[in-house]
Length: 486
Ligand code: ATP
Ligand code: MG
Ligand code: MG
Ligand code: MG
Image (cartoon, rainbow, N blue to C red; front, side, top):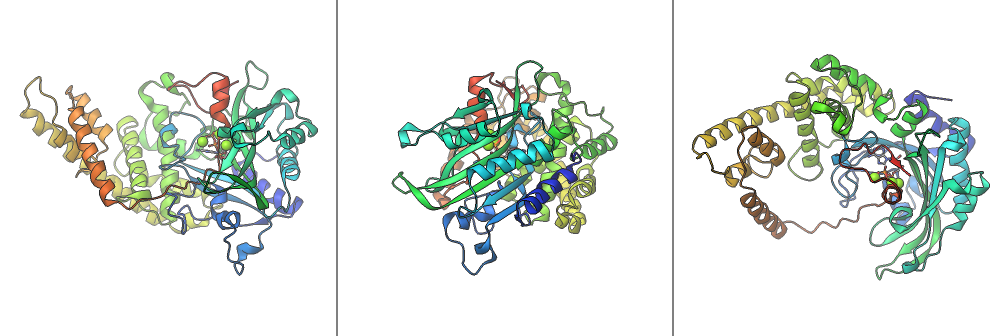
């Protein structure tokens, strides 16, 4: 079975093309086209939204799509699906990841085929032992008058999954909805047990298979869709970790060249995979943040999203600044370091996404420019703090207006938590009440100015993790979220 990331990706695509007659389509740009409800493309299905909505132009190529598969560049930072806060702290969530997906439009095939294909691929092509796989299905939603998806349950049982590893969950986890209205339906997910019989199961979600059967009307009612569709997504990084026998997506060939380059460029101790409280000094967290963020920055810039002042560009700027802080403050990276990682990203992803190769130089120089600007802001911020401290009495709090003017919402573009950290280092308290007042004023001001942006977020991905966690051991702030106990 394939284990190298490139071979794993290829095996997915050729499985669906050669064995099951799917047409391969390229990844869409991470910049959503004509969809203001999204900051970034966050799932493989985004580009097929018109098919689900029934608004596809009959003259377009998409109108002919029946069986399709691809590997989609996804970014989950900001907006409904943001995983930004988890990155660095856990071993399975990235701001940029690749989603492998297959689709069957208009009832081309449905649950039975979708589940069998997924099972065949995982167990026969990738050689994953069946007894490491768990599945979940929709257990029904009495309030909405929906019964359990016993069809999916029986499909798994018929495929040989023992009943003890076929679990049902409610609408939160196993019912997918595009938004307040629109196509929706139950989903079934495949999870992998990292523990493999040694102690309690440690599950990580691998693959989500959504069956679109209903339309949510404006009055909240569900109507049967004229057409049914299959929409699936599996994270390449997690799959590769499983196939390489790793507990962490960072311990795979998608990340190790980056972690090596960071080690060489910064002179920090080598990456050792510690998480939570065990990661003293947050060295390994910093490695993960920097490796994750430089991939996201590279992919976004290649697709024309540049760090900037609002919307997706602002999210990207925050990502860049987070990477700069972790690299310079924790890993002692020299100035200009982030840009030097871009060729390593291009080396690992450029064959799959050639646009990265084409804009490699531009990405590196943009990253370096923004890094330099941020480092300069930091220096100016430190000077402003010094000057302000000089005129404060020993028991004074740090004035909110000054902190605000240093922050992203103010002039210098320093994230507020960073300002707080800098003050903490100086042993001075911030006037947090004053700051809250300023933030509220600004929010009101913005609300008056901004056009209402409707977040119809594509909830492709309703998540079994939460419910599974509720049944098992909930993760603490510090615990790795790559997996959860059952
Ligand atoms: P999780 O519950 O782990 O957050 P999810 O339910 O949000 O995952 P889906 O929205 O169902 O994920 O997306 C389909 C697949 O994409 C997941 O099964 C997982 O393999 C992968 N995936 C989702 N989010 C991430 C991420 N932030 N980084 C890497 N892979 C991800
Ligand atoms: Mg989930
Ligand atoms: Mg999911
Ligand atoms: Mg999630």
